[in-house]
Length: 369
Image (tube, rainbow, N blue to C red):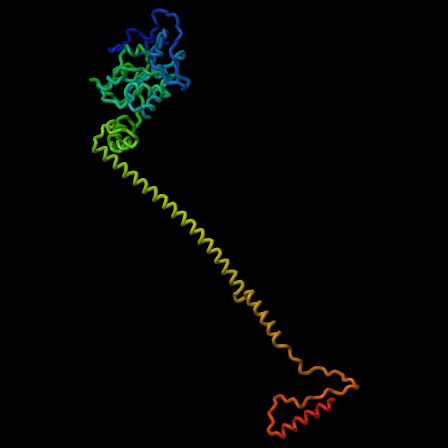
């Protein structure tokens, strides 16, 4: 394994690359006792001052190619990432995930700058340093958190924490009178670039809040915050509260409209069902009516049958004109013919005629007897 040569250092005191020359003195092999990456996520990541690396074994300088091949096998590759991490968001988490997965066996140390240092070189933060420390401790990719990290990395800091590589995006970071605070790290071959997440940053989040300041001020007033806590003037407070009341009324009107629409939709659905059922029943009624009273309906046939029966009952059948003559018995005389019953009786013309007709009727009776 190549070891660090004491004379192979840059002008800043950071070792440039491993020396391929064998060590001048044979050293007794000492086992590495560096902290291992977290295997469980049941507890937050520790702070560096609570679990500093006390390993006494020589810390060989590695190249990126060696680290990607899994070298060394007896200790993890210690990767360092630093930042402000104000309003910790998904872009921060993705950057730390990339730093954690750079090598097969990585131990990720994250340095967080203090409030004093941040306010001096970058500006005011929304979260204080204690809140930012805790946010990093609860990120699953972080193995160790370094509080009050330096703004510019020094050789003493890198040696103290036995840092192999520094991970950050490749965009030059000009600050503290330097065009790029990571320039000396890049020259030493210890810089590993990560990719920024587009569309999300702490500055973007603050810009959204400032742009929609009135909305968030009204929101917090409605949730119980006082105007003093929000630094809102008396007039603006009354304006925001009035706007909240107007929004409530709009919401009520909207709810009433939605309910009325639901009611109308239900009525329409029921009316459609009723109309459909009525159409079905009307078709059935019309079909039954036509079946009974149509041209070939059963009612017509029944009426014809009943009318024919009534006609037969009212008008008896006439005897046939030529009926067979029955044989008369010789003992009985033939039935007399009533010649005196005319088809149409005419009144007698005179009293004599009337008496004559009466006498003839009496004679006819006597003959029958």
